[in-house]
Length: 459
Image (cartoon, rainbow, N blue to C red; front, top):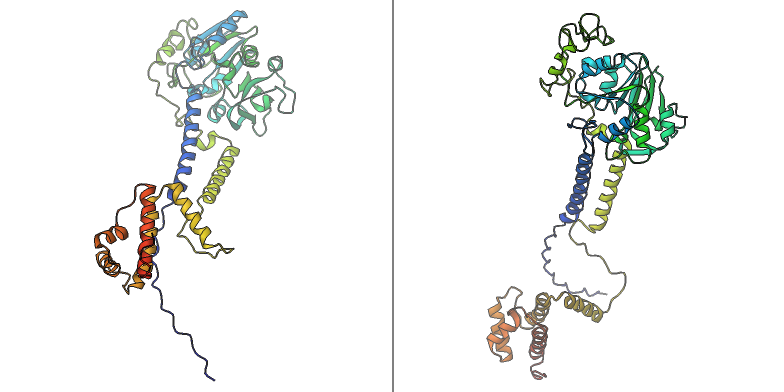
């Protein structure tokens, strides 16, 4: 028994793949916006944060937002004698005879050769350092190391660290903005902290108070929370206040009798004679007391520490570790959202429909999409392509027949004008819905005439 074989089906030529649409903007635009937002945040934060190297930072005569004139007025109102010095050596000499309080709002501007002398004040004196860096703490020999640094200053209670605060001034002030830079004790050292490490007291040769934020002393933040009470408590009291207001980085100390060895007090290393300045005291002699140190403060504000730049915290160390971890998580989440919204990253892949859709519903849905988008040109191309797909096989014409030959063949078969047939099959795009409707009716009538010549045009 012979089984008839099915005739071979003609192979349809593969349709050229449409060029993939570029979807780079789906990825680049969100990432660009995220980068722009991060950069704008960093720039705004850098502009908002005070710079200790700026002239007038925590100066008792500066009335700007980052000055300290309001604090100086509050201290004078409490009867505290405020003496402003613009030279480190003159400030050290001004603490004699003690006791006195030496306030250093910008320790980074102090020359490394004089850092060790800051802790050799007369008995009963106090040294207050604002946000000192690791370089300053090492130069002064204090058993303190910087800990974690926050993005912005935090307002906390004095006992926020879990231990009672040993400073009565901080206890009376209560909540204050003192936590920007935290400090801890070096191995083998002893410190007593408040405000979760934002303020520490060191029982050193001189009583040293280290505070990790400038907010309580600034004009724009002094009246918030307990900032005023904390600042006046640390700098006030029965002692005289010497306010070191450096206009810029201090130059290296020079002059007769000066020895840069750390540990020498202001009475044995700054001059000759019986007084601390040599000769007749701070006002005379051949040491810094005769004005030489004050004159040397103007020799150049760019003379920095011999060990390098005072900025020892790069951008990586300027923010806590949790900030970078959070930033990485946000970046990964944003990348996942971009990939999810990008849908597909390659050419369309045909997939079988899960259900059978009637052709009438497909045609109606596609027509509604064309109508909503007002895509009269694509709709006209679809109608003409469908008409040519039916007419060419009927007239035994190959698919690559030129449009003029197609129009002439159809016109000869139907008896119509070749120009009208060419306009109908290959004409311009319709500009109104009425023209599109007329084109659809004309193509339908042309197909009916070609397939049923005896019926003619029923319309």
